Length: 202
Image 1 (tube, rainbow, N blue to C red):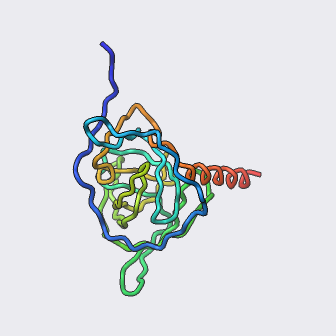
Image 2: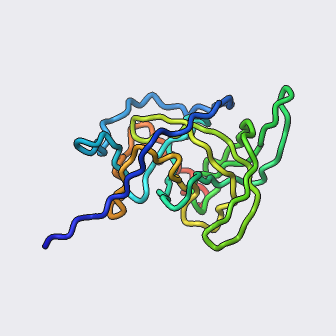
Image 3: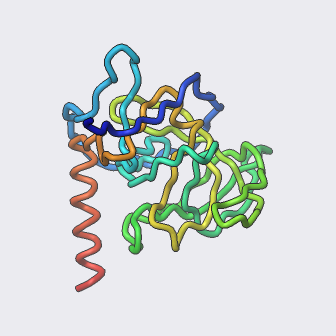
């Protein structure tokens, strides 16, 4: 009997949070190319592999590599030196976003409204309180607003995890990778990252 890959289905509506964030726009006139992903017939779900390239349009970041984590409810983002600040009486969080693994390329400072503080237990069983912010994430051609906790993921394999709250309405194929493909802006951004990394090594 032929074996078929196991698919995890996350259903329901995603939570939409208010978002007021300064946006840094990566200069690119590229037009998105047709993605390699498709909707699952009869289910109207976005199909994702266990790792994908996604965009963070809230902060002008065209591409960041993420791991799909159905075991976590809330997504997690690598953030250095997060600190509270107040803008016009509204609590915000300021932090450094370093989107490229094992590199200082394309680091940027981000200031985002604080949504919450939550106690989170990681896969090692260690608990810590983390800041929570809202941001937009681009899955292929679909943009949605999600919540993320800020954590130091320096020693982790991925700078970002996408949890169930961000994956609602998706089908996950754990045997596949990069089903979303990359649009032209993401390709150009990653070429720029490689040039920056080559410069660091020279």
